[in-house]
Image 1 (cartoon, rainbow, N blue to C red):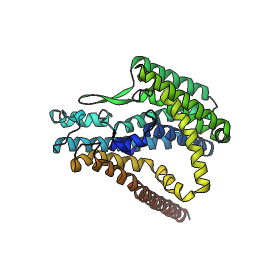
Image 2 (spheres, rainbow, N blue to C red):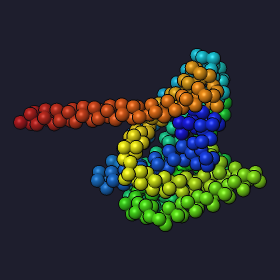
Image 3 (cartoon, one colour):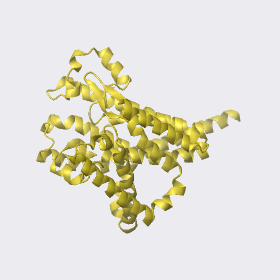
Image 4 (tube, one colour):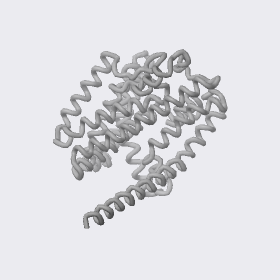
Length: 346
């Protein structure tokens, strides 16, 4: 994702993306759904369905605020510098009140920022899904998700606007299908993890992935691959390849974790603080052209991508330390309040 957002089309990007239909967006949304499915079930079983939904809603609000802040940053850069995102080129003609309204209603979605608006929609769906999932009604969730996906594909509907010049890139109503599959798998992870670790799953993932990839290459030659592999619409081929890639990479990471845990630990830390790292990446994407120009294939831009990737580790550590400190403060505050309540009672 770092390479794709900073130096799209460069030599480094081609090396990191040998399969054009498997990228950071697929992995990011799949892993988010998987982890949220695991966590939501655990919270529903230990604290109750409502508590699980509340935690998801809080996460959704954090993403909402982050999207507004990043959109505002993009607007400020567009208005105050010679560099301007084409999608924000007409912001100077818009009143401040209207701009604030667009931000508040998620209608500012420049490239590489729009995925947070998609996440807000996905978490809103997850809040709804927790109740039927807790009652074992996973077919209802899957069927409703499939119906929404079919409507999005048939009607070309489901994108957030990108004011003032057009529509956002990613179709949230289509991308929710991959998120839903991962959410359901995560909910039943205790049952599915052992089969996903087996040789049969690995063979199916490799074989199925190769078949889909070959089919995509053939379709590309005839100019018919767009509908099946389109990124903006999250085509069915892209979904199948994302699932195949997950199984292969999951097994590889388990192998690496068993034999070279020191190499896996930094990746795990960055993954556990993915939102902080993504926000950092987006700030870099917005501000980097001011320093070195908008030249995604240049050596300087590719070096910047490498530096940004390496910088994700200290960002994740800093976010972890801040979270730990905040949790300690909350515990002390709760403990002090409980002590005061006990004293007053006595």
